[in-house]
Length: 294
Image 1 (cartoon, helix red, strand yellow):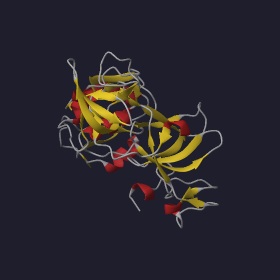
Image 2 (cartoon, helix red, strand yellow; image 1 turned 180 degrees about the horizontal axis):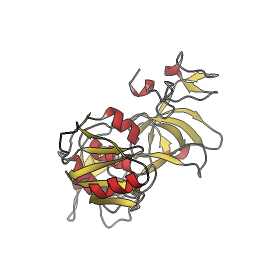
Image 3 (tube, one colour; image 1 turned 60 degrees about the vertical axis):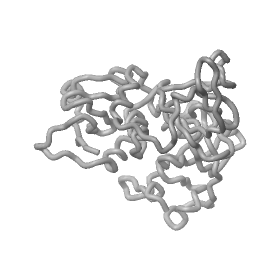
Image 4 (cartoon, helix red, strand yellow; image 1 turned 90 degrees about the horizontal axis):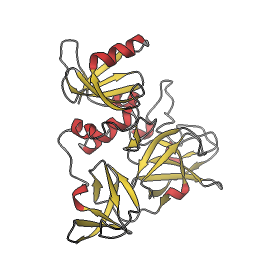
C-alpha cells in the first residue's frame, strides 16, 4: 500500500482527501482500515479533457478541490447514473468526484508532457488549423509520430491531434529551477483548486512548479508543509526556492525578501516583498508556520 493510501488526518483516521472511502463504499486496498458497506477495486482510466475539476460532491456546482490535467491517470471506484465518477488521482492520490465524460481508457504510456504554460492541440500538423483545445503545463501526451511544415515541427498525439514540438519534452526531463517555472504563471487569476493558466491556487502553483522540476509534491499546503524539505532554524537566512508556509497557504521565495504566490489578496499570482505578506497575514491573526528548504 502506498504512502498516500495510508495518510491520516489530525484525528488519526485515514485522510479522506487521500483515501477513497465513504460509509457505503471504499477502495478495496483500505479493507481492514475503514468501515464501509462494500469494498471495490478501482478501474484504471485517464483524463481526456484539457483539464477537469475534481469536486467535493457529484454536482457541477460543488466546490472544486483540485484539477486533473490531460493524460493524468485515475482509478474509478463508482460511476453514477447521473454521469459522475468517484475517483482517486494516481499522481498525488487526491480523491473526489469527476465528470464521467472526461474519462476514457488508458491508451499507451505517456511519452511527453507540456512544458509551456499552455499549448494548442491542432487537428493536424498545421498551425493555421482551428485548435481543438488548449493543453496546460504538465499535461501528459502519448506521441505517436512527427511531422513538419514550413512553419513548425510537430509531435503527433495519440489518438489524434498535433502539438508544436518546442512545447513538449520527454516525461523524464526536468527543469533546473522550479521558481522559474512558477514565475511563468505571474498574473494568472487566483482560482481555488486550480492548476492551470486559466486559474491556479497557492498549493497548485507549488505542486505544478515542483513537478516540472522532478519533485513530487502533495496537493494541499498542509500536506506540503509536512512532506517537503526541512524547516529552517532561526539563524538560517532564507533564499531563492525556499517555501514559506502559513496555515492554509504557501508561497515560493524569489530571494531572501521577495515572495511569489497565488493569493486571494491580489486575486492572481503575484510578487511582493515577503514582509508585506507577513504583515498582512499577521494583522489577520495568521503567522508564518515554517520556512522549508527542499
